[in-house]
Length: 316
Image (spheres, one colour):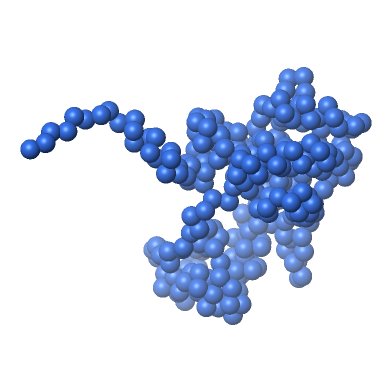
């Protein structure tokens, strides 16, 4: 058995892995390696690695006890650990390190119990604002609120993806900013297929959207929905427009993803089938929908418990 620096092993693993993954996934791996994993473990020899060392790195990411003094979300750290495990498995196969168990523990996170969703009144206000201040860009806000579309899917949507005859919207592309490996890491915009097969989906065209489309002038069938021409609008530019739009119409600010969250929560609160909601959102697993969007309030819990058959109580 011979040993090598973990950095060399990681990049060798990546060069082998990138042959089988999408460009956007490859860029994501580069970002995770360059910004988190290699600064923490890159200089170590493979024979020095063990569970205790990696566990300490995980704690330092969670607590901010590191050179950058920045904390990292548990969900991000879980992804980092997954990549580290893949690299270690590759190293064992290459015979540059001995196998060892890697069972990572995490410090419990405090969660904000308040769901980041717009109230029914705020959703009505958003719809009214879009109708009164209609443009191709503002139409996108309505599109996301009423269909739950992700911002990357919205930015990649062409008018040809909206079939007003069959009344269906086809999600077949997504747009995102990704990182490239270089001496000085850079980013670029990539338009590609959605991350999973379930994300590529068809969404029924709601009547409200169909009616609003009729009010938009001179639609270019080959253009992007948000620009009505051949040039796309990237997500961070559109987020800035969205923020200014809410301020202009005196609507309390929640981030763009809250439109999607509000869509899902609204459907579930009105009794929609969970499986149907999951498919509309493009989730690959219904558990994702359940964990992210199903948060019964006290009123719903009270109605639920009253469904239980009454029992005649016996006293003394």
